[in-house]
Image (tube, rainbow over all chains, first blue to last red; front, top):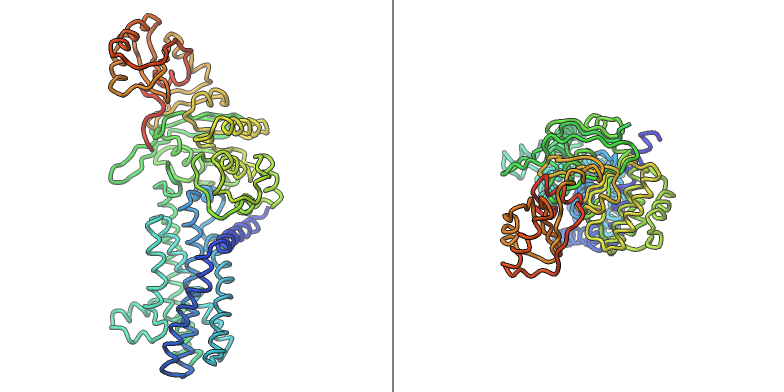
Length: 259
Length: 311
C-alpha cells in the first residue's frame, strides 16, 4: 500500500483513539463544555456588568475562542502520547511504523471537532446574550486558523518535552499554552507589559495571531506577515527540538517502560 | 536465512548510576524458529528486545531484522515485527474491538483483520468488553491478538506467560505453537525453564547482560551431564542456603517457590547434604535426586538461580 495512504491511516488512528477516549470520559467531555463555558461566562458576565461596548464583548468572545483553539491544537496529540505512556502501552505504539508528526496531525483532526463544539457554544451565547456578531467572517476565520497554527507549533514542542521527560512533562505541558496566551495579550495589547516582557511577547506567533483577531474589531493592525515570520521561526525550532528529542529518547530507552 | 541477527551489541543506560544492560551480545535467529532468551529479572532480556525492535539504540554493535539494519531502516522493520509483553498495562475505557481497530489502523490493516485476530487469539466473545477489566489470561490473549495484527514476520514475546495460571499459560503456549506453525519467527523471553524447553528450538541463557550459553535444550543439558541435581522440598532462608553451598561437593544452590535445588558433583554428595539438613534441624518435606534441567545449566554457568534481581 502507498506510504501516503498508510500515513493517512495512522493519522486517522490517532484521531479515532482520542475520540474513543473523549466519548467515555466525563472529564474530557468537560474540556469542550464546562471548562470553556466557565471561562467564557465569567469573563463576559464580568465585563457585561460594566459595559455593553461591542469591542469589549467582541475581544472576550474572540480571545477566549482563540485561546481554546491554541489549547486544543497543542494538547490533543500530547495527551494521546501521555495516555499511552501512563497506561504502559507506549511501546506498543512506538514499535508501529508511526511517525511523530502523525501524532500532531491526528491531534489536529480531533481538535477541529472539539473547537467546532466550543465555537458554536461561544458564538451562540455571545450572540443571544450579548448581541455580538462577527464583523468579517473571512478575516475572523483567518485569525482562528492563525491560532490553530500556533497550537500546532506548541504541540510539536510539547511532544518533544513529553518524549524526554515522560510523566514529569505533564504539568509543564498543561500550563504551557495558558502561559503563552497570557504573554501574548489575549484580551489586551502587549504594550501593557514592561519593555523586556513586551519584547518577548513580540517574538511569539501567538501575539500576532491574537492581533489578527483583534484586527477584525479594529483593535490592532492587520499584519499577517509578522505572524507567518514568527510562526516559521518557532516551527523550525520546534521541529528541530522534537526530532532531536525523539533520537535522545530512543537512545536513553525512554520509549519503553522497563519492568 | 536469519530472521534476526545481533552482532556484538552493548548498551549502558546513563544516569546518576550508569547501568551496563548488555555487553557484547551476539545471536542469530533463523526464519521459522522459536528462539528462547532465558535469564532472571534484570539480565538484559527486555533491553535486548527493545534494541531489536528499535525502541532503543545500542551503544555498540549492529542489529538486523528480516535482512534490514534496524537503525537505518527502522520504518521498514516496524512493518514486519510486533511485540507481546507479559506485563503491559492497557488503556482504560477501550473495548477489545476499539483498541485492536486502533492498532489495525496504525499498521494500515483493514478492519476485517480485527475480527480475524480476535478469532485466532480466541477472544471473539470479548469483542465489546473493556480490555482493562480482563483477567491476566484474557489480557494476554488480547496482546497476542494485537501482536499479530500486522501479520509480523518476527514476533517478539517478552514473558508472555508471566503471572498466568496453569490453564491460561497452556492456552498461550498453544497459540505460540500455532503462530510458529504458520511461519512466524518468534523470540521468546522467559524465566520459566520448562516453558523454554517445551517451546523453543534453541535457547540462549543470559545473565548480567551477557549470553553465557546457547544451543538446543538437549545440547545445553549435556553441559551438566556429569553432575547431579538434588531437590529438597521446602523453603530455606539465605543463611541456610549459604551453609548448604559450603557443603563439600555442592556446586550451586537455588531456591524456587517451594523447593531448593542443589547442583552437586556426584551422588555421594547426598550424604553430607542430608547431614547438614539434620544437624540444622531444617524443616523439609522431602529430598530426592532430579534430572538436570536448563536451570541447572544456568546455575552451573552463573552460580545464580533464575529468581534473582530486579529490573
